[in-house]
Length: 625
Image (cartoon, rainbow, N blue to C red; front, top):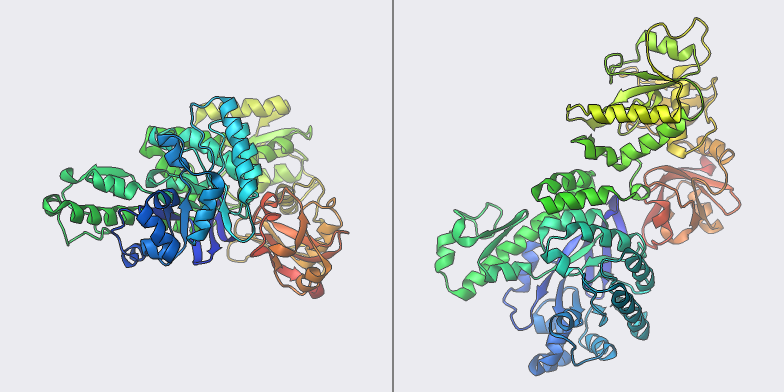
């Protein structure tokens, strides 16, 4: 699978099949071969790229089996794009054992020309005992091993019920498959147990092969799409569009409504201005079923379109935060999501500002990084000065009194920001100056935070104008760029010297370039982080322990990269696992010889899995030096 854009674990990507590419995230509508009333033209007009049908239903129906074996599944259901076939596992869960074994049903899917073939896995239920779930995980893996081949796309469902360690084990085992559905979740979806789903998706995603698509089996309601995508789901399947239509339910992104209780269809609906709800109620059942199904599919794909746009503009997290207030079960799921440390998978910054809503925002990855850095910052044993809102005007130059106090002491200076205190030097670094606050004070949190700081360093007091002396012992601007460097690269040594020249924008006063002699070491980005020049990369390469902040490639790729060309995933031999997506990295060989500098497109934990696409977007190669 190739990835183009990402936010957290969410990604816009491409997965190739024999009948075409699938751009993710997307939905596969479930097509019942006995009830196929939507044409491929109608499906594609809504945005359908691929569909899913059930090979078990086809095989157990003699006429369908014969037609599928003769003409193929694509002709049978009249769809010429990618088709995934399920194996009958869900039917086995609902009705008991089915009459075919794993080998038979997989071979049948191959014989009818399925693009994505699903093994006959063991469905794990939420109420299963640990021993039952573990046995199902092991048997499902055994079944994958007996049919897994390189000449077909085999879907190996991740099972394990609600037991985190079993989901983790299953994710690692099933990563041998080329396509990774998360199974056993329909009962949780039907009972609104979204917080359990959050845990299942996270444990499945971060322990599986990142280069392979993650499919949430049965996750067909748009209410939970954004959550699922943010946590790494690429593909869904949905039979809800037709199930709701059968019950005269009209689907919207936030829920469903009864056809008899709506006044009109929304403007985005394919039924808008063509039919009124009253006219549809009076229509014959077949017509009503088809038209409502089209509307419901459109609602589903509207949500997918919105999610893709949110990933592109880096606002999906914000969208999920908004969605979390739509239902108590979603809010509980949101709080469960925040309890996980997903920081390693988030970019160093986002293109969009970070919205501060309430105290739950403190659990956001970006604020967690700030707090973690602040803890290390105040542990140096030096006296720490807290500067409150009244003394600090964010967005304005540092006042002369505070600047004098800073430059004539060696104290730690923390500024108040959203009722917490962070290093003054990070005043412009994401998300500090890119935050849109609610303006609602959180006094209890502030007091607890100050107490926490004092437990780390008792030498803490609030700023007063008597602080400081007459002799200048440090320069704030130079300290600032070194502190940004410490934060960005998790380093305790200084990269910049007092003699380095700092060039600021004449219009804004913001730092632009840092030079040593006539060479640029780094440029400060709009998000307050540093972009290294190749000269800066050379300096950094001599300071950081190997392989920290490095992506390691072979000689052939290195020669290419040294000329300023991007690093492709397939040439990455190793990397620092702690690399953060969007952060600058050095491209070296396995001996540490520098080829180039650039920014990583994914985290170090993901980089070794991908084989297609760009791993590092190179700024400069060593041959430019």
